[in-house]
Image (cartoon, rainbow, N blue to C red; front, top):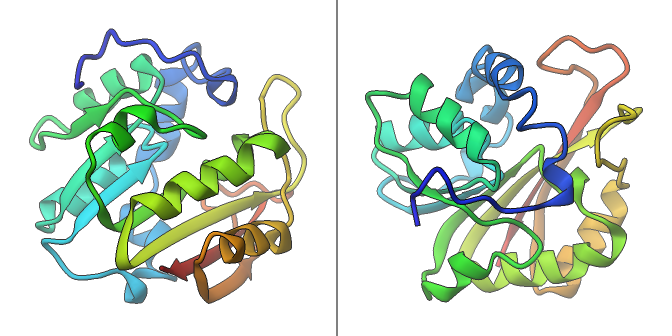
Length: 206
């Protein structure tokens, strides 16, 4: 399950393997605290079970593991998982080579999570993938579990498989899957300083 050679062919991961080092440098230049502080107050305390979907280099997974959380990190791109191990040598990250919308490996474990993180990942899903993805995420949440999402808005680079998805659509899908909206807010500031990119946060409870 943790093997770095496992390749998962996912359209949304297009461009990541080729530029893994560059993306890793970008991700690791921003702290877990800076990205999650707007919504940290909604997260359950350690040692809650956390599923970090689209974990990238494991920045958030490593930070949460260090805080005492039990973290599983889902990342389909082997090159990103390898970068994660290079950047987080002091933390053992439980990598799972899996992806949205199916999350087949994760679901096969039968585990349920107190917190699911979808940080800068939802924008990679095609319209027809979003409902099954939301259903599977909802199914992986424990009772009263929290799902925290950051949603990207702005122009999409030509070489990337990415979409600007309205918050309203995502919130409606979550509601359909039995998730209650606790918080939603838009932020103009992009953590990497891109003027044309903005983000919003949405937090739900099962």
